Length: 337
Image (tube, rainbow, N blue to C red; front, side, top):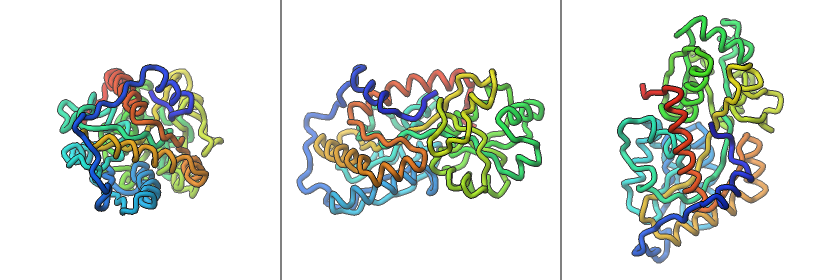
């Protein structure tokens, strides 16, 4: 499984054969870009990590380029609906996608038929951030079922198949796959309920309509700190600086969960054929924004690891992640509900 992206991994992406992104030779930048508002499509509902990151970046790009950068939520099909819309958009730099490990690494292996080609239909602009997931449970339900730890959860779910409900931000997301991997490694069975993003899933989880969720840390963190949700573990290889007191799944789960990792990443992409100099300008300004002390502090306080790697490095990462997650899907037996 994939941990949050570290500086060492980003360097490795460069030195381990990061192929250059192929752009059509005829693609030339349009004079005066951007000539109108730029739309950043978020393929999930408002309130989740993909949405939060897009809304953090949009005003920084707007300030630099002098045109509004508008976040447009287009949820559905584990991110496929919004991603497909961007893939079919005019490649003039006015429509972008905040893609995820789901839309650009997991879904191609999970869905029998995709509405877009995650490699041929897009130009990677820049990875924005990597984040761990966190296993959270409704506190009242945790008390009701006597679940105070990851080990408790594994024992209860195995002894009571189908009793617990597991929410996710949608089929194919790393949130979904983290739960499927947990089930396959422990022999537990929980009923999966996919939502159209973390936002609506969290609402039902906090209300007690769902029992648990492997959510991205940035969207779950405020609810953990407020006590509305109980964090059992983070899914990264190491503990998160944002929640240093919370163990990893491997730490808390015992031998059955040795090696468990399931994290997420988020990045900006454009439709294939977008002029190279527009892609380059977007990458450079995204990297500058992510390097500012204010943005670094904002993302790190939410448990995210800021990135800003080049288009070619992002393309190499997508290729590597596609291969890795295909194996995870096969091993876990995950299927689209």
